[in-house]
Length: 145
Ligand SMILES: [Zn+2]
Figure 1 (cartoon, rainbow, N blue to C red):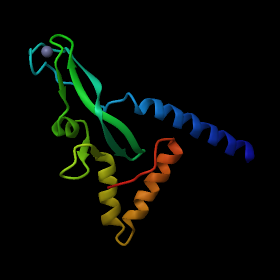
Figure 2 (figure 1 turned 60 degrees about the horizontal axis):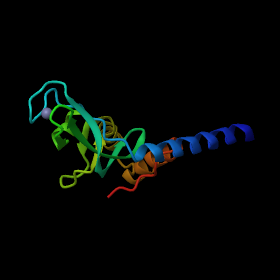
Figure 3 (figure 1 turned 90 degrees about the vertical axis):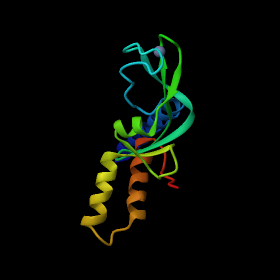
């Protein structure tokens, strides 16, 4: 019993350290454009993290990442991923005004069904459940705006 608990704590610590490192350098995973928007060369773009933080909430919890930048290795220009790029990757804006907070389609579907199939259940409890998932996975707790 005690041994199992220690193993779980070690795993959480390892995940936390991994995610702290990862948080500094990971862009929101969106698909790169097929061709460059500037020089029109095909397959020259790669995804790099931008400077603005971006929160993604999935059914696996919250991930503090960075906005996605596309960089063309042919003409060296960069372009920030648009809301449309994020939606195409499966992330919908959490609010109409913010472009640094997205919810995954799978989580939105779970929340929709949760809300309509189990009326009377608390959205706050749903958020607390997701927060518990995040903390166990070694990411961060949810603080929604
Ligand atoms: Zn280019």
